[in-house]
Length: 292
Image (cartoon, rainbow, N blue to C red; front, side, top):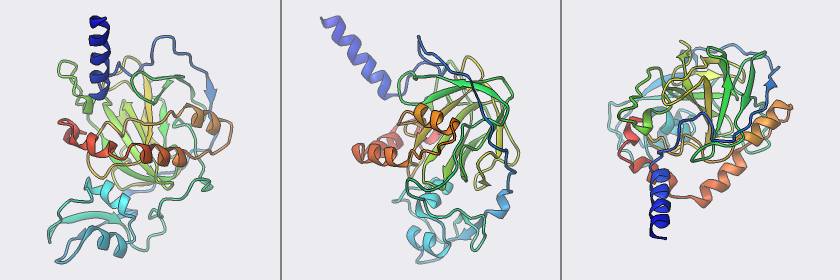
């Protein structure tokens, strides 16, 4: 009995620290092949979507968001800030380009009419895990160097082009290897990881339309085979990896998108956030959060 309790406690602690098994799927996982036929879009350069705002005396984050027409959530994500962050005169912040038609609109509600798709180019054969080890996410398997695309129209808010993962240290913030996070126009963060290479135009602040090529499938980070780790969440106001990796199961959404139904995950994420109001604070307080 004592041994069983100790094992249970160890499992709980391990899960809380994000020490999950590699992202190749749990034992007994089954996958379903699928083909994607949505058209591939063309990437828009980052310079056309963002600009630099120099903080002035008396500025606040809410005021900067208002006068630059940058949603506050997007402003925080683009600059890795929190609502409580102190900004001093002279600081340069990335904001959406004022008056630019490619600038992101405020987050849209569920049933927003946005087109969503699996994050792989037309003609690429792929399959995904029906479960995931440790937390809700999906591993989408495809041939190495397959073209990965934006699953939704939005703004690139996080990119890592180097594989910093060291298995000896096993820093959970580096397990995703090379990754891209897109803040969709629905306010959802679409996180994709383990890429072999990030495309040159995929930079923080870039506006992408659904189907925009963003990277090449690989197995960087803690991965045993070529695949895309796919996680859904709402962005936190500071750097973290624990929420970003995924908080709701994406498999049902992938199935809907494959069949041509653009089901939004926003309502489910709103419910999860309401039920877990301290999740971001806990994630941002982890010692490895600044490495995300």
